[in-house]
Image 1 (tube, rainbow, N blue to C red):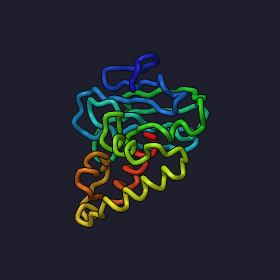
Image 2: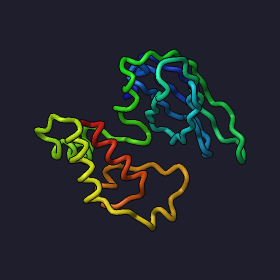
Image 3: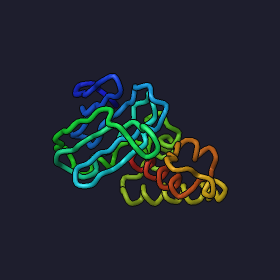
Image 4: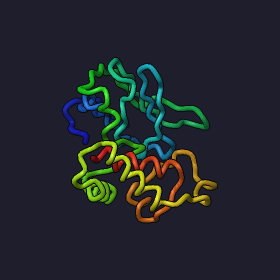
Length: 187
């Protein structure tokens, strides 16, 4: 959630870094470019994400504690990008696993998601975390089939929508992984 407590904003983009202790930042592009928008997050490793326009996107801070450089770029032409905004921020995580237990661009879910409800139903009364993993894993592999047609046509930048994967009962490897991860993170 973009809380607005710590924000770097200009006419093109907003970086909300209020939740760095919880292992993520929120980024929203508000400029008027119709071309691709990318975000780079760098600490030890540089991660590059595609960013939708006019929509908050949660991006994880997966390299642990340290100073992160967050840069939003607009495509200018071909493979050339121009800097829209940037921020350097020092991160001190509350928990080293924080970036891996929250929703983000690759594993996007909310409390109202059908995937979260299904995970709660499947794991009701189960206390052992490994047993939860087992029941969610078995659900996913028994109820989702591999979509060869989608695999042959998927485009770069594809992001799974967990409830769609559950509804369609099929997907590619990324869909399987995101669905299972979202269900488990919600628990």
